[in-house]
Length: 206
Ligand code: URA
Image 1 (cartoon, rainbow, N blue to C red):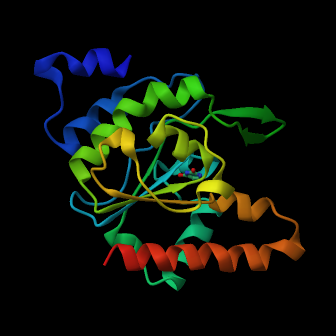
Image 2 (cartoon, rainbow, N blue to C red):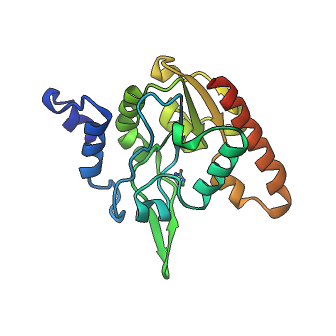
């Protein structure tokens, strides 16, 4: 596992680039992904967003949050006054997992075991980026960051990530793909609430 390999002292990465090089070389835990999708953004970014795992488009392009959910996130960030370029975006799990249905690759939710396999990397990433605020997008990110299953509806809003020694402020909100799955009549209000969350994130990140 990643932890055992990288914990051998001379291999422990000293920079985010060195950590990313290890992640890039790693095999997916569940075979199938084209490539590892690394976090994107600079060390020292004020706000870090943590998603679930790369989707079909992210797997093809090798960048986080570039598919439909990512585009929705970008739009909501812009509306809330958050500069995507100045933020750090990453995922709890670094490889796409899917089921083939004809020509389509249907995303499959990572298991708790998979989340914990990738957790060491996420923790180190956040160590290096050292953001002021970490935003968990959806339940998988919450599981990765807290080690617990916590319903989003209960925890939505500012949150303390004790497992990470309160090294940064936390915030929990829904995953943008949840908004895409809602029935049309519920979308508008849910999107507005999401943008409202991101406005609070922008405030906390100032
Ligand atoms: N969903 C995620 O959680 N992450 C991505 O990068 C894309 C979609």
